[in-house]
Image (cartoon, rainbow, N blue to C red):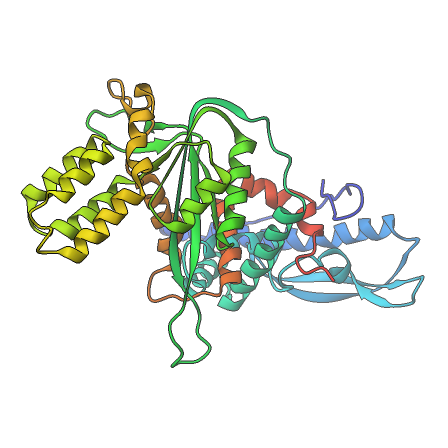
Length: 437
């Protein structure tokens, strides 16, 4: 049963036969012949199925169209290149001549690729550049496929996905009652494309947010330290920070109903405005890694002084940390570094002291169970490395903000296999126009 874009389900019944004969010296020769025969039968079945589907569709719409003739359309499919038969019809009301490819397949990125190949092109482009992705697809189907076709699929379906998220978001499921919800936010920068060679290098920010309810061991083997985030919800976007903050807040309210909500980030001014605007009641933790880097910039190679200054910081006592810093013997030697660190600690005292207000059951683990809350932002930093840096920051790559946003949303959707398959199988995905008039 094949369900078309507009009408009811149409019954299609076709048959193709694969025959394999010959003498084979090894299993490798047999397998190569078997794959070739299977692909040939698949191409034949593909052609017959689409021809029968068009005949069934025309029989259901004979009051609007009259059949004229057949024409051939070259298509790249998972079985290779196929000469697809397409009906030419005449519309009775207007008298125009149309091909069924314009009537039935108008919601595609390109007419050269089949829908299944467009889906694979989008998935391949989220992991590597367009040229390596095109080469991998070419080896898979046995026919050359250009990188611009992969680029067109990403931009077309990425714009469609963004429009669907903005205009018709999926209905939220009932929020899950959880004892604690940890939210981490961080930002990174991507190099912007330059129209002129000698123009100054520009960058634009990309924001990433995480919601999770705790940590669990990935493997039960003794000595393994690999952890997995429980109930992870990821949001990544190049949108302005104010818009990103509202989406990040909405994502938390849609999926979770926590008893305790914690926010962890660094001391960036933009992230500070985000948490004050959208999460005013949630305790905020200042990332200890950024504090360590700030203290290291002041102490330099002096390990004893570094340990002395970090001792009250690990105890989450901002008053003691400021007093220890004011009594540092390095103060007259590095006055600028001292003023920078003193301003950093005094401006983020609430993030330092919030660690003591977290319940002890969330800060400490039991046996081999890791604690739900940690003082570092390793989770969001690792997700930035995996979701953004590996695809967008290697080999001097530069991006347009709009095109990078489309690829980011496809990559985010691909991280959820069930949502990825469901999105490609839904009818609205093929009926929503990415560029409405």
